[in-house]
Image (cartoon, helix red, strand yellow):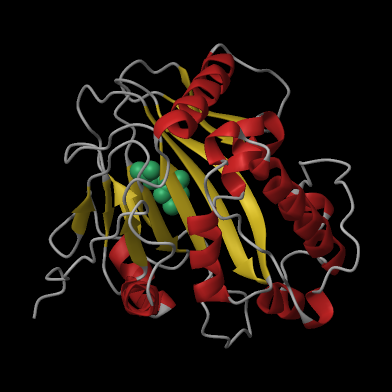
Length: 304
Ligand SMILES: O=C(O)CCC(=O)C(=O)O
Ligand SMILES: [Fe+2]
């Protein structure tokens, strides 16, 4: 069997409550998983509208705010918005989305009950700027960690990604050595012989392991593409190896609990069974506290 002959599981979030054990194993083996129809109806509309506002605000130019990150447009040579950090702080529909029960139940299957939400960002492909995202890993597993549970991003697509512009992944590259991954990333151009494309519709989600190789080509005349990245980590890996302090983990757990309560008050989530976050052992929460903020800057909580 060739590298790219993977049998993608077909997962529709409207038809099951979480990923199955078999689908979880596909993710562990291949480093990615596609889930259709996670955001639907009113939630999709609300999230799209809020992120459109944020995109337009950012695209107009936000000075002196490190949360708004710009690059040079390939076509225009102008400054273009490429990323916005801490989107949960910037929009209520992002707080509600963090508590999506299908997603949290599935994260729990892969990471255990003590999972922690870490990064939350919007990644952008500006219209017509043909930005290429070269082959990369998002991050390395912390040094010294041998815990096999995956650290991964949940990518919520708010716009279509067609074969011209979509993400490509190399199945199984999450298991490669650093040397093998570095050598593949050093190949010139955006080579796809050993990769598969992952076309997406608005509301679909990709789980991608931080160590799976991925990237996207330059699409000629590409439309705007907005993707929300929520990263999750097993609490035991964070506690043992960082990169954040223990204080950060507790703050983010309270933030997550608050977002779960917020979701229960959202009209568009009223018919669903909420996720029950029940961390245990040293991660157990005795009394939930209202979070003081929704933006805990990573650099303020790095370990020494
Ligand atoms: O959305 C894409 O095409 C890739 C973005 C990406 O991998 C990243 O920003 O880390
Ligand atoms: Fe990435």
